[in-house]
Image (tube, rainbow, N blue to C red; front, side, top):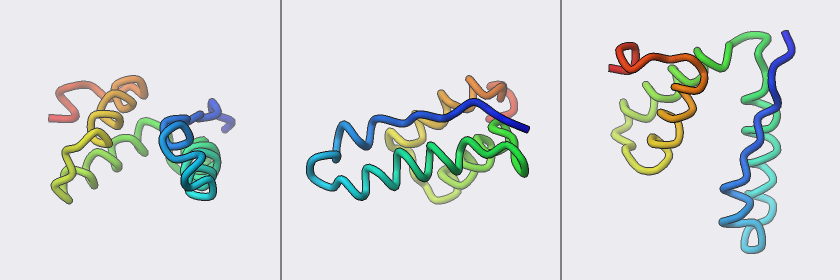
Length: 82
């Protein structure tokens, strides 16, 4: 199943000139290729797993905020997150 191409630019804006290879791996590989795969795991399920992993690790920084917003866009309800 072909899905929408995920585009992540925050890492490139923040680190592009300082750490260009990291920005490439984060933006193009992780979000561009891995998150765009829908053949084994839907974006909805991928978001749910990511949120659970972040919370289980006690990570409540901006990455959790970003992934909560993305989860909502991917169809996860507030009740399901709770």
